Each structure stands twice: as C-alpha cells, then as structure tokens.
Length: 295
Image 1 (tube, rainbow, N blue to C red):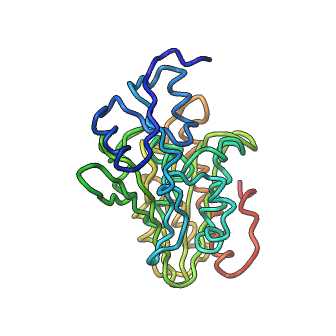
Image 2: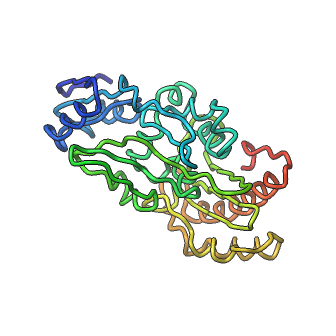
Image 3: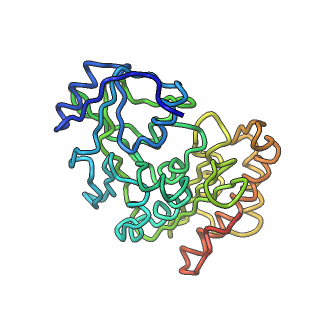
C-alpha cells in the first residue's frame, strides 16, 4: 500500500535543530527513527503529518552505556542492539530476552525502544520490563529537559506524557543493588511475530522484593501494587503463589476482542504470573530456565 499523503521531510544535523523543528511544526510534526509503526500509520492514513523529522543520524541518541548506576538507552537504540548487547545481558538480562519477543528479526533491526514506548499501545512488549525496573524517560524541548517516571508515561491507549514539542532523548533504567532477576512472559496466538494477547513481567531481588507488571490486559500497561504488597519480604511457596494468582482478579481489566476473550486473558494472566514467579526465583538461585517456552 503506497503512502498517499504528502509531507515535508527534514533530517536535522543536531539535537537543537530537531527541537526547533518540533517547536515549529507542533502536533503536525512527527519524529521518525526506526519508523516501523509510523510507516504503517502513514500508509493507513491514521497519521497525516505536515513533516517527518528524521533523527536517525543524531549520534547523541545512539548511547547504550552504564552511567551513574543506570543503564542508559538512547532514543535510536534498536531492539536487536538490546538483545545482543553484553552489557544489557549482564546488567538487566530480562531486557535482552524480552527484546527478542518484539515482532520479527527485520522489525527488531529497525524498531527502537523509545519509539515503542511512544506508540503506547496496550500490548507493547517493552513496557513490563521498564515498569518493574522503575525506568525513567528523559525528554528534551527548547525549554529544557525533564524526566518522566515510566509509571507516569502511559496515559491512555496511544497517549503518553510526551508534549508535542518534546523529543525522547534516552531511557534510564536504575540497576538494583544486589542480585536480581526478571522474566517477561508473552502470550501469543502462535510462535513468531504476534502481538501479545496478555503479558506478565516479574522482577525479584535477593531481598525478597517483588515487582509485577502486566500488558495487553488494560488500557495501558500497569504495575500491580496489590500483588507486590502481598509478596513483599516473603519467600515464595505454593500457598503464597496461590494467593498471588487470586490477587490478579481486579488488578487487570482485559477485554474480549477478535484475538482472545477477557476470561481467557484473565486466566492466562494467573497462569503466567505463577510461571513467571517460579522462573524468576529459579534464575535468582542460579538455575537454568527456558524463558522462551514458559507459555
């Protein structure tokens, strides 16, 4: 399907130039980096901007490093880079493995983490890991820089806290003190490229701290304060896991659509939470876990 809409194309040579373009075009300007979601929206005329602002050449956005206790991910870093990075595999293995669940190899080679969170679809695969690790999104405009907690980022389906004149500069993920492990489990209709019907992310520390997040079962990806409070400070056992499963009810709000019923999604969230908790606990204990086949 061709793109029928006409628009200007700008490729800024610097961050200040990109920010100036955003200020000039406002909501009629669209940032393009990987473009895997944007090009589809353009073809389907869901989006009709006056200008595309191409940031792929801005080297300041290619950062992938450990800085001041944070894993810092620039806006141009792709999912393939995250999956293959030894730094990511060492510091936050959950991010590396969850990156492999995003779409196909071809898409991961172009799609960026920053672009993924900007689409803000309920099923986005990057959300659970960012939520359980309390990530921060750093954005810039001509007025300056601000930091947005990932828990405040998602406002509604395809709506974020990003202002029209702001550019996502980088995502910062704090590295927890001590040992920690996490698991993202994604329910799809088949192996390979598919959107999540439901997803669960779990992170556990060696101090029995637990973080739990869901995607694709509510208007926005969300953390579960109720389940986290139930688990906090306790050693996992079958009774505690049973209680956690029961607590899923009321913490998610799945819908019925062409891809799955709300009842099925709710049941599978309970199943996936149990398996995620056990898998993360095993990883923390140094055991080998086949994360890819937990569902």
